[in-house]
Length: 230
Ligand SMILES: [Ca+2]
Ligand SMILES: [Ca+2]
Ligand SMILES: [Ca+2]
Ligand SMILES: [Ca+2]
Image 1 (tube, rainbow, N blue to C red):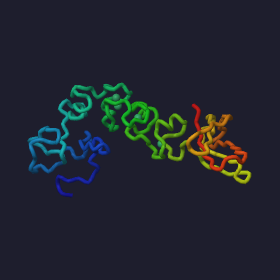
Image 2 (cartoon, helix red, strand yellow):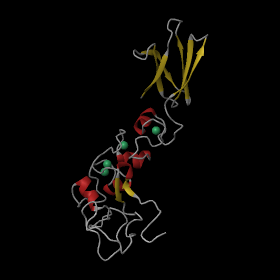
Image 3 (spheres, rainbow, N blue to C red):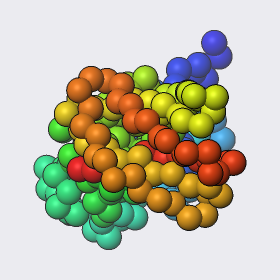
Image 4 (cartoon, rainbow, N blue to C red):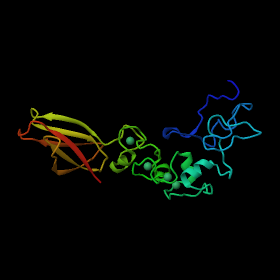
């Protein structure tokens, strides 16, 4: 590998949000070619260093108060460079420094807008505070918490499992993935526009719950949905 080049993850602050600044542990820091022709300032108008190797790329990691939070990041999010790493500017339970490590916004209590505070996601739920659906199963972390499913397990989610016709398609048995002990209600619609809740509440006694729908032969199309009652 040529001097001044690396093949490691450059560890940008938040590439998903197009923030290509360097994290404090980025391998780019002080790995630039020492004799490179450098511009006078980087993307934050901070000067390139004199007398030492520069950082690779368009950002020079500058942390003049040595609190591990780069100066540009403190200025951009906290409007000061005097924020303390152990402080919690937005009072969301996640320290300013941990906001940086977790690619969060230190001035926003719920960076990924899934209804759960950054600190609660990191410290309690162990979900990614910068990913609305940590296990990529199509249901947000917040909705999974609400429905009682595991936001870290893509096989654990609240959805209908099967709709089984009975009695020559007059009746149907609807089954869904449930939380044992959870309470549910089946809704029926002939047209996906008007929905009719069934009278009976169903309490799941295992991971699969079921309800039977009797149409008495009066409707042709049938749609179902299941409501979770917290
Ligand atoms: Ca915080
Ligand atoms: Ca935050
Ligand atoms: Ca969140
Ligand atoms: Ca999920």
